Every structure is written in C-alpha cells, then in structure tokens.
Image (cartoon, rainbow, N blue to C red; front, side, top):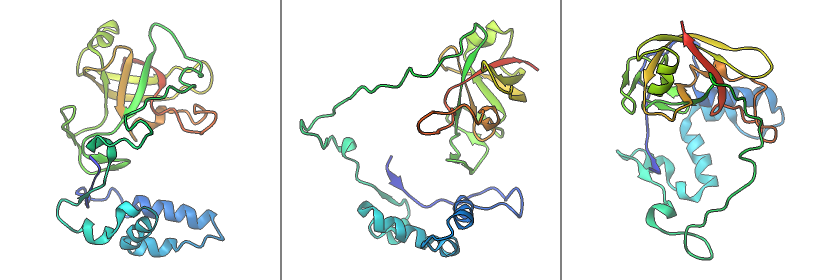
Length: 226
C-alpha cells in the first residue's frame, strides 16, 4: 500500500450533468465560502494545481506532478512497513481509548448489524467498474453479504431476493428492496452492502454525537424475503 498512481474512469458517465468529486467539492466551497482565497475554479480547470497544493502541504509529495506521470506511480514513506516506529521505545505502542461502547445498542433476535463497504473497482465513492474480485461478485452491486447461519435462520438461501430495513428504536424506517442475498464468510449477526447503494439505510440522525460521522459501519437492520 501507500502507492500513489494515476487512475482514469472506464465507465461512460451516467449523465452529461455528472461532475467529478473535486468539482462537487469546489462547487460547494464556492457557494459557501464567499471570502475564500482558494482558486476553486482554477483547481477544477487543471488538476495539476491540486497536486501542487498538496505538495505544498505534505513534503512527502514532493515533485508530485512529475512522479505521478511515471508508470506505476510512486510509494510514500511509511514507517511501520519498514519496522520503524517513531516512539520513545522505538517499538509499536497500542493505547486503549474510551468510547467504544458509549452508544445504545439495538438488540433483538432478528436484528443484524449492517456495514457499508466498497468493491475492488471502487475508490471512495468513485466506481470504476462493476466487478468485485475481492468477493467474487461481477457485473452488479445490488447485493447484501450474509453469514450462512443468518440466511438459514430467516429461511433464506444464497441468491434469494430480499428487502433490508432499518431497525432503530425510534425514527423513520428506511428500506431498500430487491437486493440479492449472497452467502459470505462474514461474522454471524453482521451483514454488508456496497455504498453508495446502501446509503439510503443510514439515517441522517444516526451519527456520532461528537464528530457528526454517520453510522455507515453500524446500522441495525432486518433482512426479509422480498
């Protein structure tokens, strides 16, 4: 990992109005930061300017535009991969922190815990292809990965069409319909689905109280036959 290389989308745009992630971010910035000194339009006109700005902040990205044009890209230095630990002991140090169990947990025999994931052909929210060689799913993304025991407990089999709905103690019930159940080696009681396809199951009000981060990795849901 820590490899930095150029990439290019292979799928035709879903719409002529479709914009890149940098264009979306720059558009929001222009609309809200009226006194900004950042040349948002210039960033979108030439992505080299974005890389120049990154280089100006992070020294490890020196000569960014030159190195990114080298086939295969370049590798960022990362101490742990070289067994270099920048600590007083010169060893890896693990620190337990508080807060893992602060949220109320919705518990019931039929409730599963949903995490949203990305596929092999996906970088953040950009989908470059419809194949996921990590999980042997090809040509589609409307699937939910489930443990074989959780499938059996609900009278389901691999390949069945299912509905997924949120199971929070309060608030609106959100539902996705017509997903295909895929038997997978996932922890019992847990299910996974791709984002952004499964984002509709993440309630806006269900987020961390301090950071505001939505609960993309832990949403109580029920899965039933369609």
